[in-house]
Length: 117
Figure 1 (cartoon, rainbow, N blue to C red):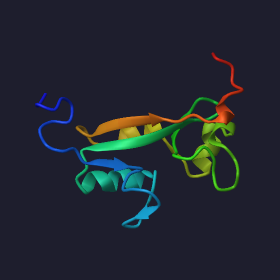
Figure 2: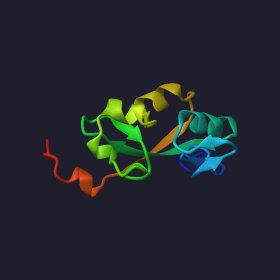
Figure 3: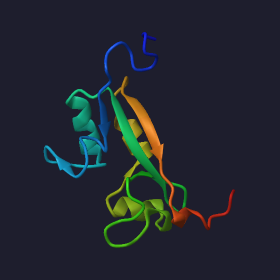
């Protein structure tokens, strides 16, 4: 490793939500297209917000809920995907080798009633 550990010798470029918040350069945040575009634009690392659905599927989402008032924690993985969510598995499978990933694992009050197991 370089002098700066995992980041190497130069400043690391990190893409948050892919290309950024909202719609950047035509790419909507937290979509596979946005993450892959960020890589094409030259980022070294991606910061990925991760949430858990009620059946323990990990999805890429910054906010605890959707615009319609439903919460990711109350949806199944299939429902989340049908609603447009990107699964973490699909993102990781699509990323090219050599891209660093920083996971920001999110939680919300909607997660609290779950059993510890």
